Image (cartoon, rainbow, N blue to C red; front, top):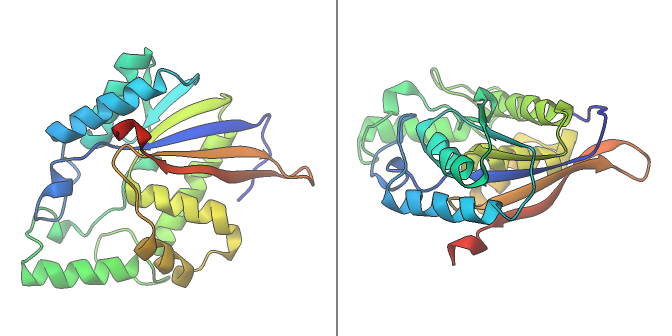
Length: 219
């Protein structure tokens, strides 16, 4: 998972603001934008980031992350780069926008949730545990190879927890360990999480978790 790069770096990860889908009684689709509260949260994290020096702004291209990144771009005068590496876990298309109380969607949703922490299990056209870990590795490798020293990345709560699990446990991460993390670790909308990429005392470049889910800007 560790890749030799030219220099050390700090990456500030921001979960998007609250979306319409976050508070809807249905399975959120990809096109859900920020709601009124989420827009306010995006402005709050944007103001906070004006006090941090960074060189690049990267975002998932989904509407809720795009809306959040645009608020940050306006406040910091940065140009947004979009990358599909940082999108949220992909649901089975059959449950998108269906009510949580729909028995068929409920059953399929539970199976999909299990597949997110069960290696080798796949539910229809969704992402599973193996897909997410592979994408987390690709995202971390992409960031480690960027030339900038300080970056802001706007992403999603579950995928951020996947990257965090990979950083904390590395190649010792298992589906059972990830199940524990998934069930016990939460992430606030616009929570700020910071990874550092730096050498260990042996001189090996390694990702390290520095700050997790800091949402002091929300008051």
